[in-house]
Length: 453
Image (cartoon, rainbow, N blue to C red; front, side):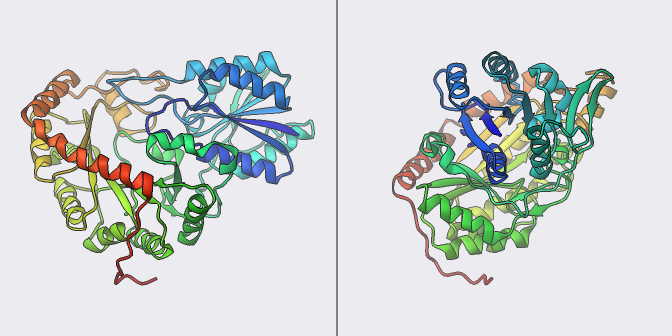
């Protein structure tokens, strides 16, 4: 069967390459289907490009990979779904092929996005085996409506089959030859490489438990390094992002991966997220030896009272300790601060910003306002406080307003902080120069370490 897999993401912030879409395309091709991958990210006229590609391939099935419901950013909100619904209309007007949609956004809102796009079927979950099974049934002319994770409609209504989250422990990500990877370098990272999925913490605002599961599922470090080697030597990748909720969770598997990356003697560099919690000087040194160009500490807030309500698994002292380890190891780090959760106060925001000065990050990435997500403590609080109704499915974006301050006040506090500390951004200049140099020439660190595998 001829299949067109379409990566619909057009948001160029960090320019994420189509990791999941390529995984599905790779599996369907291995099943014997004739697969064409259509990447809309860099098309100047995506609708025209989509139509032209569909005419060339004349598919029997079209699959949409939908990464984001929206950008979850209160200050610069962007919703890609109307455009994606428009792409779906172009499919219906161009070819006589049904439409199957999937991706992280669809796992969160499968029935809603299926209805909005008019897709024949939606698939929720991360397991490619059910996708393979369902596509095979479509090829045989008898769609298997019992497929786990399938969402469909018939004369009796809309049906959502239960789905499971299995992680990617046994997966091999590839298929990079299907896209122009060099175009993604404009976003600094050539692409992302999955190292671990799942998160048990249950932060008040996060729905990762739905899309990636509540248990850590680390991938085999050998497989990850093999993918990094392929990306560098075959595709010329210079910088990648290691995809995880925190490379330091679980700590020992993170150390093992870093040690293997260092031993592989790659020239490419990588960036990653560090989740406040378990982290030591040894881990920081391994980051340096493995060519970590930057680490993002996502600390939300540095006010312990707000952390207790939103992310009770750590405190501000844990973030300060991680910042110290990274500084000692000469690993540049950014500090992510996101204000406006349950229990946030104006004084707490001020304390957070003042506390961040001693950490000396190369950059603070500061935001205001949490999008209310389904099945989260933040949604429960929003319902209890009358900000949304109990029957609100959260598909239409609403942002939480803390009871003791306002998002407008928080933005004013951030602006005042930036005016009061105008030279804080100078650290970023050296980091940018270093990043450009490494992007052009690569970087290699060969310091011998004391961590064995």
